[in-house]
Length: 402
Image 1: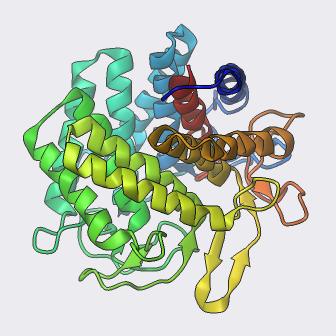
Image 2 (image 1 turned 180 degrees about the vertical axis):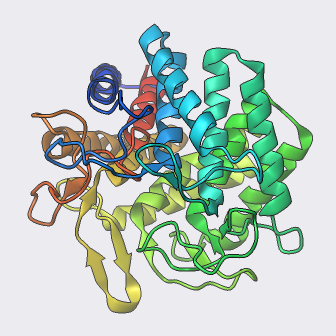
């Protein structure tokens, strides 16, 4: 597409500012989160930037640290980033990987002892995602093999061979479990959009380095799951929770997941080279982007969730939702060339820069409330507050705008 001088300037500024921000985020994690006493990284840092003693350590946090530092090193080689990635990899291997039953534990305690041993497919997916990226950074063949083995395990233990899709969670030894939820706020259902989206993301990253036909087959099946079940073609939002028979169990709208899916789905189709699905998903991405615009506030920030059944808008602007808006709307501009999407992406960054960056301690606040105040009761680092959405957004914009 042809670019005006104004657009060229905006892209240059975007790439420059997010290059600085990526460095700032990673510096925060290097300087504040390394647990020198017990190994790995602290399990939790509060909003006041104080380490919470004895906090559990999560597999998702550690996998996201591994991915972030590996991806940053792959963007621009940095020996310090690779050392942090090495540390995260060793901790995952030594404390989270289940050598007996396979997969990863959900949490260990502050000293690395097993705590919550359930097998969330989501956690194994992020480990595949991280191992794939670390393989590129480290050139260690064994790491790629570990990612391949985890893929085989998920297909064997979690994939629904009759109806397709992945079941959400299992016991330590991969038996049925009553509580399938990722967190207390999630519905207790067997198939969820969130887990499927990140299984897709993990498989896509693995395919970059291991273009296996069976892996490609499962990526196609996941894309079909989104087209057939998760995407509401009429409303343009994503359906979030299903039972094992693909019966919809929720009407909740998650604006952050809507806009995140627009670019992750397209990326998967592009990586496997499926032109038919890719063209179909370009249209879908614009449809979802337009639906997401419904959740924008006048300041360019994206609200968290909306529950149609109760006509309730959850008026918080979480850090990860704004990060995904930045990438998703930029992706929509790349698809269609309509500068309104580029402007929405830029406004997302302005909101982050002005209201969500913690200018005193570094990193990003969890978010801001409906009164534009930082959400001080939430983590700065923790089981869910990780260097992933924000580092990934910076990396994506740097690549796309550069």
